[in-house]
Each structure stands twice: as structure tokens, then as C-alpha cells.
Length: 395
Ligand code: SAH
Image (cartoon, rainbow, N blue to C red):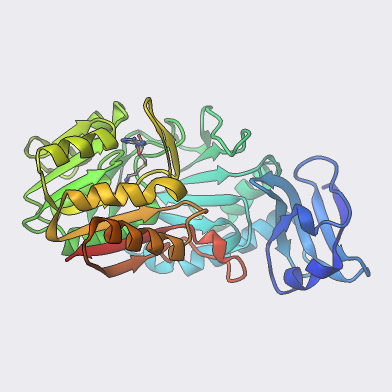
């Protein structure tokens, strides 16, 4: 394996020695050259040891530190060792027959930035976030073989410019799955597809949010689920006893995908509404008709462009909340979620404060969620905890 020496500026050396994992451009005293995947030996400008990492461009990063141990090399043993630790941490989930889909390995949170691994009932889904980490594919697969029994492996290459997904046959090794594959989460079923584009059908990081909606905010309620994708929140609400759910998404595929998620749970989708429409148009319609829901779920992408407008969470979330407030019953609950890096929790709460102030209403926050425990966060890299979800009571 190629290995080169890289110097870290003295003023950032302490940060890395304290465990910071992301190699960022400003910290480099010497430029990184060569191919992605090159192993980097990091030292401070005085020659003091910092760690060993790899070169891989991901967003604004140049790679990740993999070890602070001078004697540890980056080979299949290294990967095997990190996987072993990660799998042990998730023993409880492995032993839980009611939940067969969860994250097995969460990038830097488990010691290897740029790689995540999800378990879908014995099929592993690898997601590669840079060409650099992808160059270790053989070592990673070998490391996995040595610590886990799996039916098959699939992958998503997310390193086209801008971190985009590269469409390909995503099968790697083992047995090919039959899709939809039915996985379980807290006893509910979800139909997933591991070889059909960038997304699988369910976002595993919302497990606790789905559970909370199902247990506490559904019984006898009307539920509006916006940006609903395959309707996973709607299915949770319907199973939790919602009198009616309305799922709104502008993607045509969402209609049949949502029917499928209801059907695999034995729920009557005809008793629920599935609307293929721009959420902003739907809100205008609902306001005009003076509709009011008991639970309103907002889960927009950080950034989206539709025919008429663009939505970006940091600029437009406050207005989205105002529209949601207008169609929520008094005493109802708004579940507001964002994974936008530009919107940390404090700013997110600020949007809620402003939205209620501008609409003249009162509120209180009932629940606050971040990533679930299987989405491990690196203690020196809290920005890896991207998920922010608030349950807001409209008074
Ligand atoms: N809440 C979903 C995940 C949402 S993913 C879940 O729990 O599974 C984001 C979704 O927003 C995508 O399905 C996309 O089609 C949809 N979307 C983006 N912009 C939209 C808009 N303006 N109106 C309606 N849906 C939109």
C-alpha cells in the first residue's frame, strides 16, 4: 500500500492529538498529492507523531485519521478489528428478533470515516463516501468475512462530484437478494430494495422517531405526513391507531411505494390518503379548505428543487413550520425533522421560536431526538450527529 508523510500545522496538532478525525485542508502544512486511498502518516511540523489515515476527498475533507497508534498499519486486520468492535457494540440489536434492520458501522463514529455499513436482515449494505475509502474495498470485504456471517453484500458508491450516488449494479458478493426484502423494525415490516438507486425505501436513522409517533401521537388521530417518500411514518402512525393518515410527496414513485409499505403490514391502504403533490401546494390547498390535523410530520430534504421553487432547510424551514402550524389542531403535535448540517439544534429551535412568534401562537417542546445508538458519533466530531428531530405541542 502506498504511504506518504504529511505534516500538520503546529496550531492544529493538538486538535488531532486529542482525537479529531477529519483531515481538513487548512490543517495541512504540506499538500497531499498522489492517488486517493494513499495512506497518510501524519506528523506535526516538529516531526511529532499524530496518526495514520488515508487520503480521500469527501465534502471539504481530505481524508480521515484511522489510528493514533504508531504500530498499527492499515490492512485487512485493521478493518477486521474495527468491525469486530462495532458488531460487539450492537449485540443487543443482533439479538432482537423484532428489529432486523439497523446500522452496523457508522463511519468515523466507529473508527473509519467515509464508510457506513447497514444490516438488512443479513444483507449488508456498504456505502462508500470517497474514492479513497473505496480503494480499500478488498480489505473491507475480507475483514467483514472474518467477523460476520452474512447472506450477501451490496454497496452504494457516493463519491461522484458533490457526493452523489453512482448508478451501477450494486451487488458485491455472497447471495443475491430477492427484492423487496422484508425487514423488521420494532415488529413493523418494511419493504426494501438494495439494488434500485441511491435509497433503499427506509431511513434507518428515524427508528426511535417512528416508534414514538406510533406509540404516543397516533391513537385516534389524523396524521399528515409531508415529504413522505415510501410513507414509513404513515405506516407507523396507522399501526399506532391513527384514524387517518395523509402522505404527501411529489415523486410519482411514492404512490406505489407507500401502498406497498401499508400492504406488507396488513394495513388497509385504501383507508388512507396518498397524495402525489408538491408539499407547498398541498399546504395552500389544506389552508384554503381549513383542514386541521392532530399530528403533522415535516421531514424535508436539506435542499430540494421542484418545478416552481427551491427549498433549502437553512433559509426556508421557518416558513415551512408556519405552514404546518396553520394546519395543526390546537393541542396537536408537529414532528419537525432535519438533517441539514447548516442547521444545528440551536438554530433549529430558533426557527420554531420565530415561526410561532410570527403566527402568534404558543408551543412547548415534548421530545428531542438525535441519531439512534447504532449511528455511533465520534466524541471529538459531534458534527457527525446530523439528525435533529423535535416534537412540538401547539398550545
Ligand atoms: N420522510 C421520509 C423521507 C423523506 S426523503 C421517510 O421517513 O422515509 C425526502 C422526500 O421529499 C423525497 O421522497 C422527495 O421526493 C420529497 N420531496 C422533495 N421536495 C418535495 C416537495 N417540494 N414536495 C413534496 N415532496 C418533496
